[in-house]
Image 1 (cartoon, helix red, strand yellow):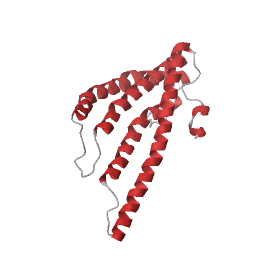
Image 2 (cartoon, helix red, strand yellow):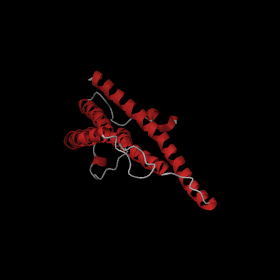
Image 3 (cartoon, helix red, strand yellow):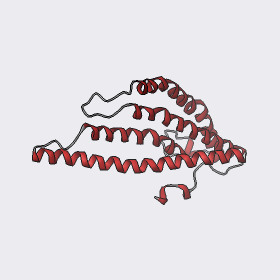
Image 4 (cartoon, one colour):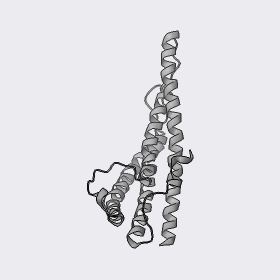
Length: 187
């Protein structure tokens, strides 16, 4: 079990770093949004087009990447929405059982299905070097690649969650909750 817990720690570290990268991408997305709005109003004022579809699409792409790639970080920090009135009343082991079964029965099968269904879609986009139909638009194949990457990261984090749940159930781990020391406080 110690080797598996070490593997879970490595996966958690990877998703922690990915989440921190998404925070910087969120800042970049906001700055691009500010530029887009400013350029549109300033352009209208002086009668010139200062913006481009590329900037708008880049803002959308960043939002999509943040949302998709941030899912594994959110799972790692148990920050997703729970609509389970019983979960909060359970013991640590009871919660670990719910997490274990939920991951095995729902999370992993769904992620594997999406990964499988998106593979050909992304491969075809790369094959034809799919581009936006908008004038000065961006390539679509890089953002489409985010879908299988995001679900692969969710699968990895699901494996980490499984290992930690088994660790709690078997008494090798006190809690599945991440340490406060590896939260976003260091940013």
